[in-house]
Image 1 (cartoon, helix red, strand yellow):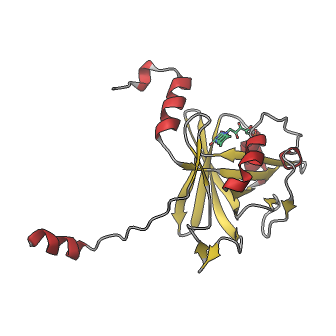
Image 2 (cartoon, helix red, strand yellow):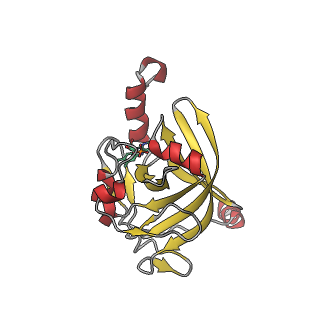
Image 3 (cartoon, protein in one colour):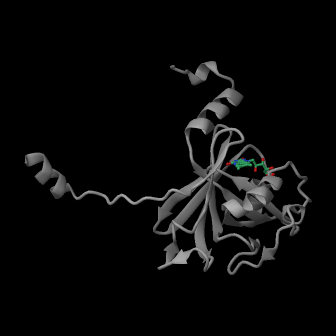
Length: 202
Ligand SMILES: Cc1cc2nc3c(=O)[nH]c(=O)nc-3n(C[C@H](O)[C@H](O)[C@H](O)COP(=O)(O)O)c2cc1C
């Protein structure tokens, strides 16, 4: 089947692309409004952009409280959604008013951040404190970039300075209402080019 995006509605393109570009990790972004109201919302358009310095981004589709808060205050925290947090994460995706506190609605314990004002989700296995750098807008997407200033990693998943893939159970967003948890972990070492050349010459 060949599909031409120009022949689809924006909604159909959204459904098609978000079903294909998977699995997507979920950045549960906490922020504060200028008057100090807490905000928390999931964003699966999320990834690493740079590691020197460390920079991540998430994309806001349209005008949302998270984007307004981050652009106004310059700070946010990416809390990673693991399988134990999927229900409260879903609650925070509801269309609350700007003066509603999603931490309270989802009955989540709040933890203070170290170097930014927005709080963290206390139960998050990983939380990434960020200083906002800039927004790049394209179409209806607004990519917000943030420099990572502090990372919190729970002792439950921490191993040798990184998140242990066997213990860390990040939830992936798939298309529509589908989600997946990463459980089957395997390792694949990257080949050395000389090794490949030797094998090819045999
Ligand atoms: C798993 C999941 C992932 C989502 N990813 C995004 C995203 O990447 N960008 C976006 O704009 N909205 C995304 N949404 C929808 C927002 O979370 C939703 O619009 C939310 O109400 C925005 O809250 P805010 O206005 O407080 O920022 C996602 C929702 C869910 C459940």
